[in-house]
Length: 217
Image (tube, rainbow, N blue to C red; front, side, top):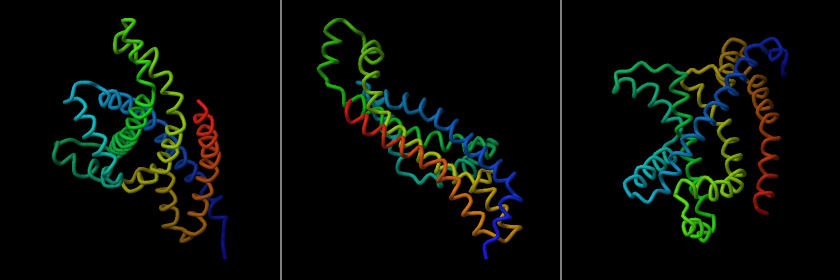
């Protein structure tokens, strides 16, 4: 028999875990957007060595499992670099760098989807590269990038569940902790699933709406 009283009696721990999950979602998305903007623009550079650096970064983080990246940053990197990295910093760096690689590809694809004729016209009237990007290309590209950016951000919230593997007290970690002394994993993990559904279903619907709007632009 299910005993969901275990959820109400441990609601404080679940709430703390949820706040940690939301906190990491917000700060890693913000940092990832900055990383994605920088790496995306690097990939659009005409200087080949810079382009290569951007491509290596993107392919590295897109093709390595996120869990492996988190474990390596938390356990292995401090040994090689002789640094003490807390679990919070390891989680922040790993998640930010990971999602940044996907944001970079979204930005690159968005910019390259703009008609090259507009770039040529802007160049013809004497605009510099930065002026072209700031005034003409990026504003148009951003409208097309909104749907995939929203979709990737939803995935990022789910990615935060891996933080529990490096003992960051997120929602999944707290669920595991509660299960360890209540012996009611079914109820606890069901509650976690419901919480994520409540958070992500509206965001997914919004993302689909943005995709429809973006397709008309």
